[in-house]
Length: 173
Image 1 (cartoon, rainbow, N blue to C red):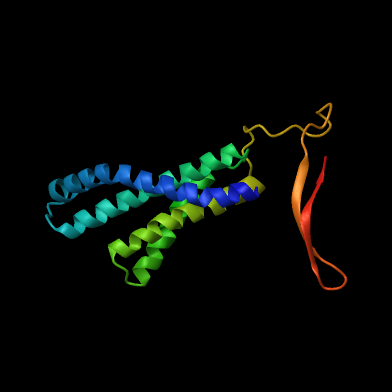
Image 2 (image 1 turned 180 degrees about the horizontal axis):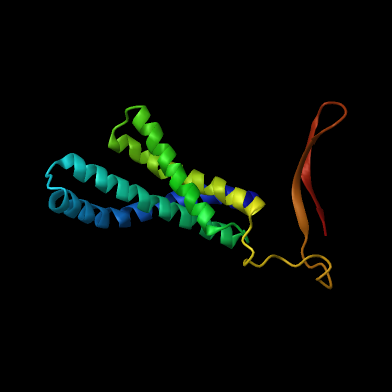
């Protein structure tokens, strides 16, 4: 779980950037059609807002998919809807923070990339812990296995009676 939690935000950030880049072109095209043909406005403000909001949604979906991919590689069982919802919620929270603090669209883009990755990671962890996907397979229990072929190892840090710190690895082999 620790490796998954450490790798999910960077993966979400990278796939969010890729998703935002891929989604920018269709967003711009739809904004151009929507602002000029449907709304009869030729202002650049309508075009900018529609393009950036479409790109932010694409970046959120990309971040959610990146977090899900890393989670599945590490045998996570979170639900896709919860992860994508967390990415969209993180994007909305980032946009709200940027709008309240009067950031420009260029400065807002950093929040629109980091917010979805963090939101997707948090909601992935919550979904994995409390509402796992029942269709995902899990590792067999100890009773189902004939012999234990896996070593269970985890880090350990503790204090001694004299005030020192001791650390190492404990496990079952």
